[in-house]
Picture (cartoon, one colour):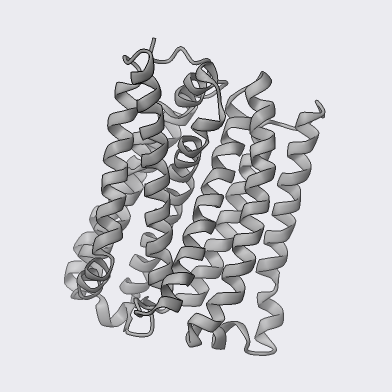
Length: 330
């Protein structure tokens, strides 16, 4: 049996991107929620993501690395078109890293300054990622309408990250901060619902390829399972977060699991919409793929490295399980 190596690498790249969006998404969301908390709560919020946030970005490096080595013809096109938002994202990531470390030792207004810079870095990073996603879906087409579409997508991404961050805090905190996180989760869910609705309506207008895929009866009837499952996950997060607020017998991780399900289903819909293109309507994964001999060597490396990354991630999350206390860096 002959392996379809471009498809395998497209799946690997998709898994890496999804892992990054979920894992780094919640700590970006926590960063954007910082101004809504008091000083003590901010320390707990930072402690809740402290052991994980830097390692979460490993998945971003893996995804971009796979794009470079597996699809070199598309790598140049994608990064050239996204040069400005990529630079903005990197500046935001660097600012987050500096602010995260320096806020620990700072006092007085200096500490408040670094808290705001941590928020700003998180927001700028999230916004840039949303703009990149919007531009990617439209095939990097120029024009005001496409820019407006990208801004709508960016707003939805920011809202999704806030939802992930809030549900993470429900899981990892307790008391007054957890109750605040439940309220933030509700706002995040409403934000996500509005963003998904707007993007779902606008995407078929922005891309003829997406329109043809989703409005091809009777296949459309089967595809309706995705939005229905997403709506069910949305309602579930809303319900279980409310039950936690009332002290019901619901595990604290349940809202976060539901938020991950929402993101996974949305990602599945996006993957279906763009496949088999690696550059929308321009370059397919087979046209962009490297030579099969190169892909075989890279696949061997990926098979060796990926279990270590996954195993280390599971180990770290297991070691640092439980509620955050705010004393991690004291």
